[in-house]
Length: 444
Figure 1: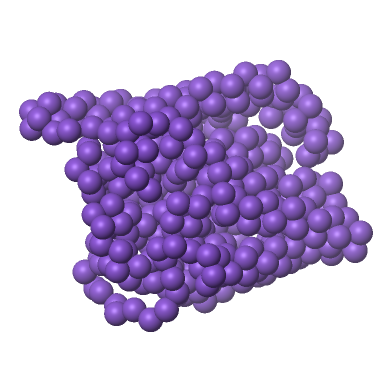
Figure 2 (figure 1 turned 90 degrees about the horizontal axis):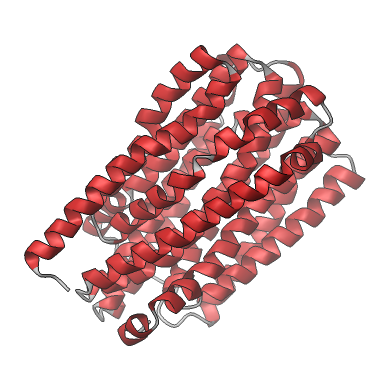
């Protein structure tokens, strides 16, 4: 990575680092959507609902992994920008090992949480059975997913984002094939879909390990001296991502609790299917954010802060335009989309009634998320944490527990766009304060 190239072709560098990340994240989202397709068509609507009830578990892993990995990658990127190659390599080794140990510890703890979680959500019958079949196996897959994601951030920081994209293609393609084999041909149901995810993730991990053993320029596996200071700084710097993902997990649990109480299993199924679109868009936004983060960290480490801000502005515009296109596309294809997953007219009607309300969140979501990524990459954990906490926990929880009570299922659809709109106000305030600081200090 060279500062001259970033200055001369800022847009080109953003796309070079982001497009491969976006494709990788879309492929990750596609795995979830394909799993939902096979669940709906080979297991049933209860299978889709069961997977959605366990999404807070997945967000717990994502939160822990992102907290360690993004925080560590930001520190490593700034060290690399400052020319401290030995230091950035030490941070890399510590970061991936910490991510692996933390996610494995979560799996051990989650073994004892299934029954209490299902009881609180009043999940019974087939939903309970499918939940246990699926997530008992996913407790093995999710630590591998976290490790793959952590390695991927350093592959991008190494200046080779295309390689991680290729491993994601392998992961997704293999997952689809194994889903069809286990669920479609062999009839293994929810457990078969989980095994497909596990095996494809392990193959991806093997490809990633090959990269760091034979192809990486800056990062190499090996011994390191643990640094408590680096660990604490990484966790604090990545705390906003942890807050964001954990908040999403908490609010997803709240969504499920409210929908199960007010509407029932059909409501959870409808919300899950509509949520696939939001999840796919959020993965696109995350891809742009993860692609921009190494550039922003590098610029900050080189004291080119105005350039870092320019990268943020351009990236925000790209995700906003993507959100508008996604909204228009779903406006034209909601009927077809809902029919791909379920045949129930009642569930399809709920999706068609609420989809466009739900997707108005796209007009603010991308800008809020990119700004949070920007503050994290710049080492400004407080601003990033406030944005993440607002859009993922405080405001959203208030909306979840009030709007469905007032408006029924329509209130469920309204919660996300109202939350993102309120958070957008905070985002504008923080960016204005930073702009005033830049002008006051005369920084580049």
